[in-house]
Length: 305
Image (cartoon, rainbow, N blue to C red; front, side, top):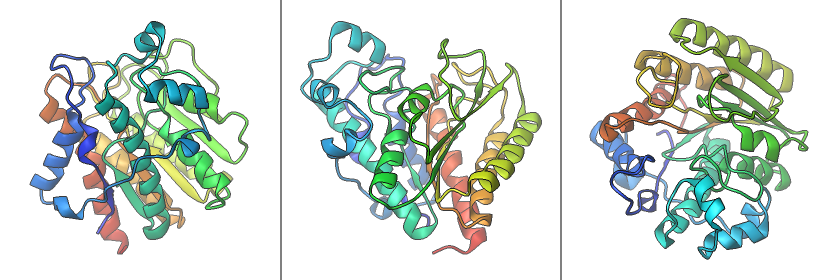
């Protein structure tokens, strides 16, 4: 069955009314189990990411300051999350989860994480609820360990993957692609290898044409050994921070397109959930679950094992 990665550390105790929906990871697991996609005991549980692997993309002093709860007031403000030991453990465990998902994708052809996509984190600072950039860490680890020769990051979160772009700008074998709403956070954009800025209000049909056209072109151009896919659902028409107009069906079609384009070219692909914001946290979890259900449909159709 499709490999899925999760750990109970992902939803630590958190202020109930905080803007960041920390409980969505636990609710996503509950939804996927409740819908019959997976049994809890079938989920792959990751180890904590070691600091030396985090340091492939992040400043060692920053890693240590975060681990010990010594971020400055300004750093805390940029992060937007209240530090705690469970949050610190959750953060490095989640990066470990993305690494495990990447390894499983290389072994099986596909894998999905029930977290990940922290694409705003920079070399020595947090930003936009992102502490360590799992996409950049995955890319650097896979390249420097010799597991792959070229990585393509296909980021469909509604916000530009600015941290990923800056962390990998001098890594020629890590190709960064960002499809994002142009008039949205961050105000100061980075420069990805490919930035595809989308207008406010774009709906399913126009968005899906961009996805198919860009994947068809870029996968043939770069022929990567793995694709890291950020399937953010903040593109949804009801998302609080989005400004695009995709429906549930549009997101499902997008996810299926990404996985299908990769598998048709025998390129392993790993999916992470990216951003999504809604006051109804159970509804949000179901929206994130579109990624995993879409991946499972492609997995079954491809006859993978």
